[in-house]
Amino acid sequence: MWSLQNLLFIICIALICATSTAAVIHVSGYEERDVNVSCSYGEGYESYEKYLCRNDCGNSDVLVKTTEAKKNKYSIYDDKKRRVFTTTLSDLSSVDAGKYWCGVTRTGKDIYTEVRVEVEPDSCCDRSTNIQSYEGGSVSISCSYESEDQNNLKYICRGKQPSTCLQQALITSDNKRKGRFRLTDDKESRKFTVNITSLTQEDSGSYLCGVHRNTGLDVFSAAELEVKDVPHFTILIYVVPAILVVLLILTFFLVMVHKNKCNRVPGDGVTVNINTLNTAEAGVKMNIYDIEDYVDMASLRPQDMSHDDDTGKDKSVYQNFTTTEDIDSQIYANHSS
Image (cartoon, rainbow, N blue to C red; front, side, top):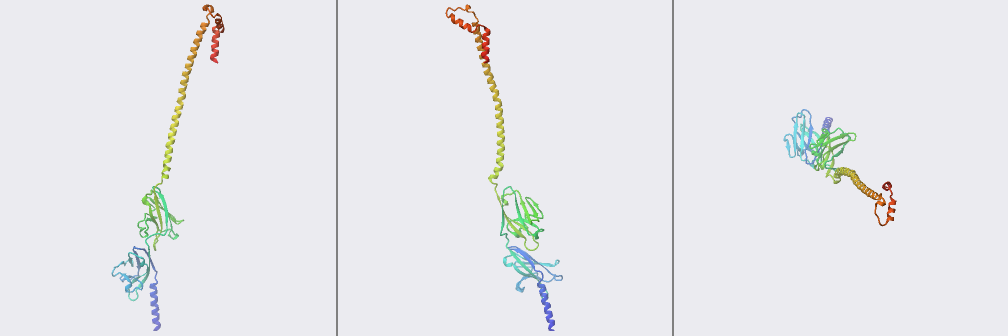
């Protein structure tokens, strides 16, 4: 008889241990946010009461049960078709972290499933990457991830709250192009990059790169973007070449005008020189006429002229130019020289 009692006791302990050592459910949530704890049960227990408790699961340790649906910050719902009941813990705080039990009431020992709840601050991260760019330009934000996350969903959002990041994602790896945003995923280097174009001052601020995980919390990395005004030297880069082009055009125009003026000046000079030559020729003609008159006078014979005095002088003059031919030869020689 004693052996039978011992055997029954051992079997009972084994059953209790078996139920209590079932797979532990791990749940994570963020402070001031909600988290759901889902527990399954076997067929035939659909109509049985379910509950969530802490510590030793005494009457005072029961937080909420299906017969009351809601109590304080806890609410419970039993999906009998799926044989899963879910308890929601609202407005999480650090004191909510720890061990819980999902219980199914039955005759004798209840069925328990252990639950571990982790509560994290709804902020990220201890470190962030600082990125700078200029208004009107573009910027790339690169985010690394672990090898086990290669096929997981990647996304980026603004702000520092991981709890709402996926719901407020600017772009995801499922939709790699959206407006000014473009996402590329390099699985070999385990890095995804988000490119943002046509930057404005409003794009400045905090960004979170997120990698979704099916169990536990998503993984995040932070970036801080600063969009600056376009610097003056950048404006000069565009303005100076335009000014230089204008100056080159003006210089070319002035050179052409000056060249045309230079081509006209020599023509005027020729005209002046021609006039001068004409004047000189006129002077030569006048001199020739004067000399011819002189020759005509000199060709007169001494006897045709009445000179009472200085007869010797007249003869010496007449001897210098005896004939008209001699005078003409002398004039030609002087003009040639």
